Amino acid sequence: VLTPPLASATVMVLRDSPQGPEVLMMRRHGNSSVLGGAHVFPGGKLDPQDLQVNPALLDQPPARLRDALGEPDLDEALAAGLHLAALRETLEECGLLLADGAAPDALRQAEARLRAGEAFVPTLTALGLPLQTARLVPWSRWITPRVPSVTRSRFDTRFFLAEAPAGQDARHDDHEATETLWVLPADGLRQYWEGTIDLAPPQIMSLSQLAHFGSVAALMAVARRRRPPLVEPEAFDLAGERVICYPGDPRHSVPQRAWPGPTRLAYRNRRFEPDGGLDALLPPG
Image 1 (cartoon, rainbow, N blue to C red):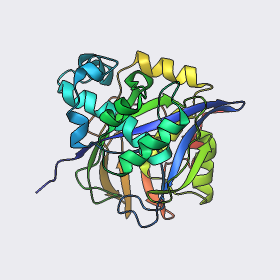
Image 2 (image 1 turned 30 degrees about the horizontal axis):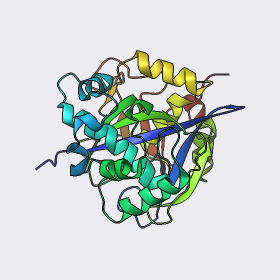
Image 3 (image 1 turned 120 degrees about the vertical axis):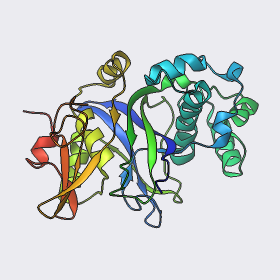
């Protein structure tokens, strides 16, 4: 029996650097049951409490949050819950509240309360911290293949972009994550190729897309103009290799591409690689 994928949210937190936008990645604890030891973007599963929020406490109407996701049939409470899960997980996993003007003392108190099991929105409200779903811009939606290639669990994950808030420092908790890394997307892919970091296919393909942009503003502008692509990877075996293909690939059921660049990754050399090697993942030139 197929298990339905778990609703989850992931945030690609960005900041500008002289060389271009950097993205925040966290190294998951080696004992983690999901992608242990791999570098991932902050994120996690939807919590039932994320769905039980009074819309009056939100900075945007739930209908607008649904429209931003580009999913007209999505339940409005779920659309709001996914945005809240993205904000909550970013605070829990790397200590960043995606909001302007958050007092450091209140932030630390919020983290302690969340660790103690208190709900996210009531905690922010009690401490006078802002709730800013508008900081999140939907980027893509990934649904784990019916036969997962990397983890046992299946996820239905909305990927968001968010600019890092000024005056806050990202840090890992040594519990879920053991390293905090700000990296240029192209450099992250090079480190993966050199074997210094481990990445799962959604991170590989997402870094490849981010590498094409020269600023956070340019990324955000494109994200706001387009409908977030739905990516349902399809896996098959070819000449003894496990291959994952994406929309637009000749073997994929969806003929329209979701993005420029490679449409498949093959598991070889104990990692996922595109045909054409590292250069296929990087912008030309």
